[in-house]
Image 1 (cartoon, rainbow over the protein chains, first blue to last red):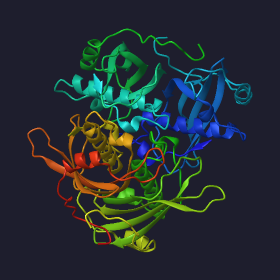
Image 2: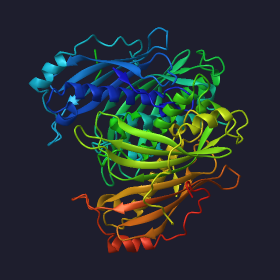
Image 3: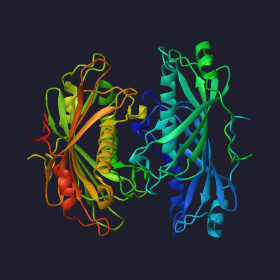
Image 4: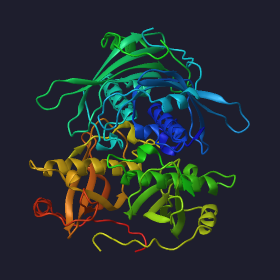
Length: 144
Length: 144
Length: 144
Length: 144
């Protein structure tokens, strides 16, 4: 999906800041949750928290007025959590698509009223199953 | 080291936003690089890029006027990269220290003039060796 | 023009934060400067700085997935500066357009090489003249 | 009061971004409200909203590890609103204090439960009276 990059996402080095890439992933995740609504409440409303991120920066991104493309998919579904994969890519006009970032997140479902962890609901599971994809092909892994 | 948390680091859920924790880590990293200067240029100036982050969220953090404590150490030094570990903790007045976030980053050294990867200099290596610590004890690891 | 509002533009009160509205205005200004390019360099590249902002908040804005509308126009052109007016509005589906924010900025043109103030160029003046509009109808003015 | 400037407050031009100055003002305002607490609830909790900002940029600010100084005072108190003045200054080691920004805000008191405007309470008025200062000496004023 296209995600808008703001001019202010650049830092003093003149590239999109590494932290702001996680902001772009947040935007893509929230847009995906909105699409998954299907007339019902979104995952944002039924309660989901970020438990973990892993992100690799492959190539610096200079700001331009065009949005980047963020692919987002599900790599795993547990009892009270699920895993997401992402790829952020961009193509200059007439140029090839290039991958700038790969990332993964673990999301935990929780009960908005009590704050306690809760099981992924049947409806959520059904929707998430429709978004299944491969594990993220990370290149590096610290301590590994 | 103490790192200031801004009121605006909270999101609509009323806790410090997951992305903003990476901003706090950036602040701690830049403060550490400033300390490492020792009269010479900082790593910010000699050229260093983020190649990878891994971050685990253990406990939500509500904003307060007091800073959080960020521990930062070196977990590995390669030819043209090094790895950092972090722990973000906080104690309410009279309460125990609690860990909110653990994280790791891989940093790549590059030549500011050419943009190409460069070797960690002897001076940088010496300074980084003085900051050695253990691998970050992550609990989760996606796809593992 | 439509401007994307990020979920993270909300603060802990659950509305778009007052500071983030200035970020939305920045986005609209940069998009306008891109449109004004006409094959030549944008004002961002020929050198322009913010000298002043004035902004009134008329109605809180809750985040939604749809963009807001930002109207942007020129209210004055001086020797080495020009003034912009803005209005940020939004309409819920089926609802009336509502104004959330009105604002004005003074921009100063400067020479990127020397850092010194420079005159608005003929080409810039011609382009800016095409965007002329009324003074911003502010309601309040401190100290007045 | 000292206010921390983050490295990320710089934009691609390598100076503290104009919007981020309003973030620094927000930080100073919230710190002031915390000081005004005096054992009671802060204005953040009793309900206060930004109705207006006016800000002038006098001199660009490059990031450094030291905080800036923000002076904050009260320039007016109305029935259901009050006005603040600010000055952001900084001194390089051994150099003179220099003013980078002057600003003013109008704050409106509201009832957190109902969302309606409410009168400034006697306790708030007493505290605010203690912070009285002069009108902000703005240089420019659009449409004036």
